[in-house]
Amino acid sequence: MLNFNYSIPTKVYFGENQINKLGRLIKKQGSRVLLTYGGGSIKRNGIYDKIVEILNSQEISFFELGGIEPNPRLTSVKEGVRICRENNIDFILAIGGGSIIDCSKIIAAGYHYEGEPWDFFVGKARITNALPIGTILTISATGSEMNGNAVISNLETEEKLAVSNEILKPKFSILDPMYTTTVPANQTIAGTVDIMSHVFEQYFSLTKEAFLQDRLAEAVLKTCIKYGPIVVKEPENYEARANLMWASSIALNGLLTYGKITDWATHGMEHELSAIYDITHGIGLGILTSHWMSYVLDESTVDKFAEYGVNVWNIDIKEDKLAMAKKAIAKTKEFFAALGIPATLHEVGINDERLEEMAQKAAGNRGLGSFKKLQKEDILKIYKAAL
Ligand code: NZQ
Ligand code: ZN
Image (cartoon, rainbow, N blue to C red; front, side):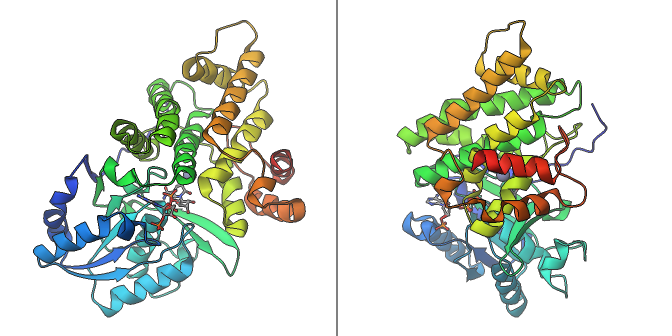
């Protein structure tokens, strides 16, 4: 196990009706609030009305930025910064999923920075200050509710890039599983795959003897495997929604990363797809994952895949580790297919025209991943296999 510094400062209020604490939580942080939300789901399912009722009853002033896109755009960040400055906002409440929370984090940082917020993503500036943010999570997927990451799309440059900074971690997050019962099936399955992919990126690692982290990781995977199919059939099943919601936070709040070298190659490859084709993040991951697994399977990685097969998929322990590893990868692919993830990039409107360009961008100057380092040609082969 490697050295690490533990820091998971976000206060989580988990369960039904935790929203009733909202007024008190906000008053600890600020008095002029920006509400951020997406394309309208919170207005249709009543969450917006409930929040406005609480804010009005506690006499908390608020302003709004609605319409934040899935794969949030830099333009929305800039609009948010403008509203914050014009109205002396001192706290941001993000209501939604990863897109809303990520956008809000960069609005919070952009407020204190005179230059372009995109500078944070291309290494021109470091985030050194940010407004405090809180979140009300409405979809289980990214873990953004407990981490310091933000992923923003720049349509002008066709880039989707990430930053990570301690300062961006939310002060509090309200996680009410009831709020996720209206998430449509396609987003529910994308979210479930995203959670699993976050675990894979940390689990498939060259670090030895991070035994505890690996058993925790397997527990999160098993939670998704058990409850993913249940929520698709029974969207209002509270216990299934609750287990997935907590899995999403645990998968990417740092707990599984501590003491390990992590991979993130599949995410790197997917971000290139959603940067150009604006596809749903979890769907892109679902299509790529088994191809990445098959490509990186070799003598140096076979033990880990066999361990995954035994501990997560209950595959019988046999002499032939390679057969066990292949079976584990096949099980992963079958599970994603049964959930309803498309099998190919073609099915989500991606053809071979720009694969080379995306492979180049994903590889950058230093290659991608660490479990097995991928260069441009490797990435291109994985994209082609997924086509
Ligand atoms: O916009 P509205 O109308 O609210 O609809 C949203 C949106 O269309 C809908 N939705 C959310 N909650 C709902 C609901 N519909 C009905 N009922 C509800 N309760 O779901 C759609 C997707 O929302 P989005 O916020 O985009 O989903 P997700 O949480 O999957 O976030 C994806 C974004 O996060 C980034 C992804 O790249 C993508 O941009 N990621 C962020 C990470 C992080 N911050 O740590 C890590 C991830 O790997 C990921 O890259
Ligand atoms: Zn992800």
